[in-house]
Length: 311
Image 1 (cartoon, helix red, strand yellow):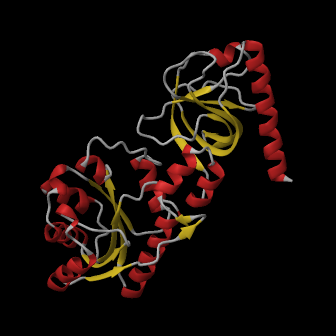
Image 2 (tube, rainbow, N blue to C red):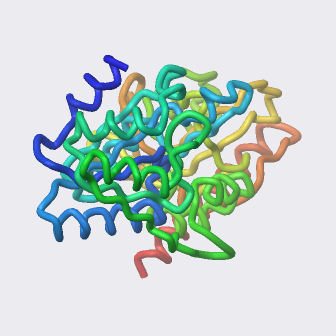
Image 3 (tube, rainbow, N blue to C red):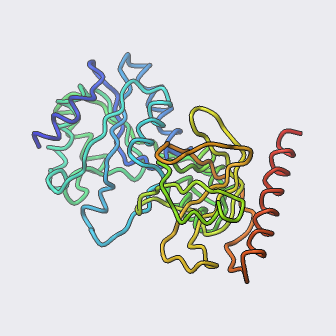
């Protein structure tokens, strides 16, 4: 509990706050709807707006066998949350010790470290051991400690239902990066250092940058995508292959990007890939010549996509 207090105190706004708590993976439009409401309530009350983001997701601690495919790394999540204009973003490491806190102890932790005077809960929020901290129970605790509680009853809807991280993951799994973009309010992106791969692309005239992606990251369905690559502050048109390269019988998924009209050494540099549009599924080719022809066609399709976008 001491470590949690230190962690939250380190990121506190330094004045009384309106707070909301969640994982906020992806920082999608539903999250931003909640955060906009938080900022409005904070402004009305003269409070700082503070977002507490839990990592890892509680389900991973409570049910270790469950695998979570994260839409964003913690670092990316914090950057996206700060970009919403809130006064403070406070990451809280969700441990087995935190999971065992009673609702009263968990809420007291927020009250003591963040100066919480207002708590905005999402419709699915419940705090403390066994999810005992329902809005009704937290309101009782608020009366004792001196903070107000509100539940945002109407989550943002989009497409066929609620905007949620699960809906984004489902869209990605189907290769529907256009829908994922609608739910996120921005293109789905991957970021990481460029590492050495098999160097096959160089040998066939299409050198690719192999992006290091952690195993817990959500990936779009295997295939080839129009993408935008950003490195060193500059953006380039690119074609990204996500998959296991069946032509070469690789056994691990990789993210490989051919950056159009780029020359230079990328090894060790950070690369960000925005995945914009699915061109085709991943295929096994009969030989190198067939593969080269397919990549050339993909590159033409990428140029056509950006030309149409600029028209």
